[in-house]
Amino acid sequence: MRRKLFTPNEAREALALLRAQVEPTPTAELGLHDVALEIGLTVNHSTYDTLYVAFALAMGAERVVVADGPFVTAMQTHPDPTLAGILLPLAAWASGQSA
Image (cartoon, rainbow, N blue to C red; front, side, top):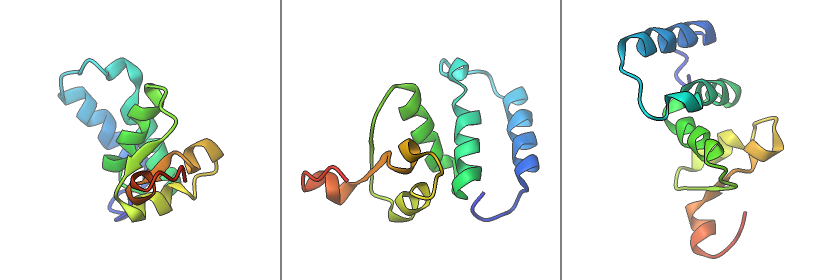
């Protein structure tokens, strides 16, 4: 999404086409791809990264430690305060800081 190669509707259609061609995985019932896509569209960031957030949410995690500064910055723009603060920069985690 970040590269703006697809419109939001094209991205949704591509995901539906991919889903029709790839055998479901054990996590299929969690709807991770849909959640990741919507997060990515909201913060204008790659669904490759937001899939980790979707999985963390499905598992009930409160924070996700990441080393990707641009991802942290993008997620901080999410309108949902829980999602805006879910990422914990690796440096903050390593130093024992919570945010």
